[in-house]
Image (cartoon, rainbow, N blue to C red; front, side, top):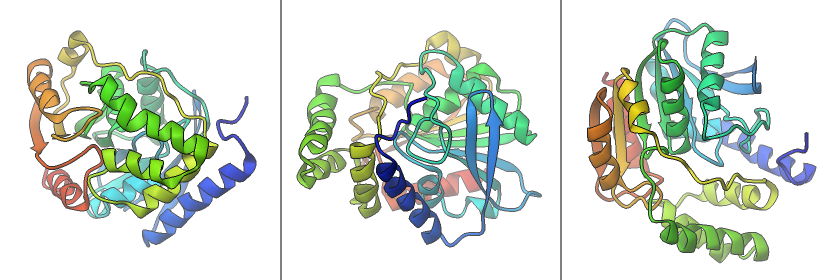
Length: 285
């Protein structure tokens, strides 16, 4: 299978940043490499095994250390399993799954079974939200509750807006390597400046074959069969998955919806202050 990384040098530089971010967290962790039906999945485990399990799922073009940095104290109450999502610029297998079927759900439930976890809390950001919802649709028996932050798979934003503000600046950066285009991309999606994201995505955009498939949305009949309590945190200024539209639809299609939060001043990638609020929400369950 051809690697999703365009060059070995690009892969090395990207994974060096992965290791750098993990080292910066100054937490005690262990790696688990789980052989699933869809390829080997790397997981960073933080926290005591006597605590209830929590699976943390990062967004597109991300990795487990970024997710752990987003919610740095969850391990005080949970044993946290931060997953490197397949076919993303991280340490898991490069098997690209389809967003149109339940492959992602089958993959995560395979992981849960291999880890022998029960009553799992799941937390996901952006594309991680799609993965979690697919997991619930496929089999929610081992899942206790989920928290979705600016999740994919519920609503989509204006495609023309995404084209001009996100896709074109990304493509121009890839073509010219002029950082001003990367800065424009980040300004559209990030509520506050993130220096690590600038370094990491500068490598990912140049060296990784990203998936540009359109993100589907959940069918009403799929949403209605979910029984697991769902908390959705939406961002009002999110151009990818608009918050107002998301909250309105979520309240009509999810019978198990426990709570919605609309962050008035947030773009797609939340700032530290709002992520702290979400973390407290999870810890206070």
